[in-house]
Length: 630
Image (tube, rainbow, N blue to C red):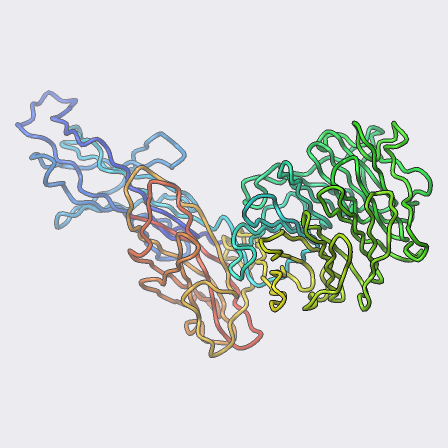
């Protein structure tokens, strides 16, 4: 199908902004290249320049410029012509445009028909006399024609399997899952107003575990086929970028096992996975070495699921076949380094024979409840709960009646351990005892994290038990687990094409009124409008939406809201809906002065598309373009 390009005048796309740039107010008395002397006076400057989008068709590329023929306060000599110039916002060079200027009734207009889509321009106009005399140019104005730079649809499946809390006074969470997804919560994480978003991930392989180094704030995640990714800091806010880490060994080979556990402390990183694999790095992931075991090692058919401890010299590794090994020593070095005998992992000891896991048991997770002397807790299948004062043991049995399966645990420093299982099991342990907690956790939970709170009111968060869901629970016994849906990012390039590709947006049921604010289900997009040194203005924003709305008349239930802060949403001042062939329709929305913002800075512009129809139907969107003009 032929690619159709939408270009709008100074505003309409996925976000845009219009900016005015003031210039010096000094007047020129004249400057000419001919041997004539001007009559006394000053050449008048152009009046206020505006840019207005002209949304006429899918291939329209016009930006309409208009200005007063002269600023009455800027001189006495009337101009006989005008020079119109433009530059891209990223190009300092002004270029004159060969435009036809028409002046009627004291207003002049010119139309730039060569503007390119997804581009931001600044324009300025200069008065001329006899094509030689000049005034200083009038104030610049910006016209932006932009597509979305980010897009997401909610609700949609984002399968998360592990979650961790970032250090600091504020709640910040990171979660990872299938397809390399990395999600973050940056605000109000313990409430229904939690701000979750999906970050840009450097990988598309499944991620199985994420941890945050409480000392440095660096985050590490591991996954299938030796995948290791890291972020140096500010990871949940999106300020810190995620990158892949090479897992090459000194032998020239690389780690290819599926990785399920990771420990990080400064430059020390240890990962575990299939094939009884343990590898560690003391260089922040720049180089790797295999870890060592003494006695009964994990074996080639054992999968190691977790590695944890208070520091790199006191660690425990657990896995399938009931495998548990510990390492503890004083001095320099790290666990797993076979250079000295006491640096290797060795089998743990048990206080009583019935505490030892059976051969088919899977020990899923291990955590350390500090501060020193502290207690290690290991959890697993069959409701397994083991505790020990040191990595080597002795480990004692703390199983709780009625608990069937535990998959993940979190230790809240000096307070308690919380553990959850796939069948809804929910256990909380102190240093001395464990007990089933109520109400039960959601079924299918695979990861848990938490933060100690005041007056013993700990906060817990869990993932799994529902696609695209994070479960949260404050410790008050009368409050249960509550779910927060995670939006799914989509490729914003789909919204550029208008060639048959589309995004599927869930509809609200027939008869349900569309909300006045942005609420799921929705398509949400954002783009950034360039800034300029001018005061706040109210830009003219036009949005073109190409869509099919099934199960209801296309103009009955459709709303496109706009926002400059992601919180307050505005209805368009006017809309027009037209058929574009078959069931395909185009809606053009124009927003008024309520979208005023400070154009002196780059400005995000968000759009929220919601529709309504019969149950189970969807709206398909294949174009969303924003133009902004002043």
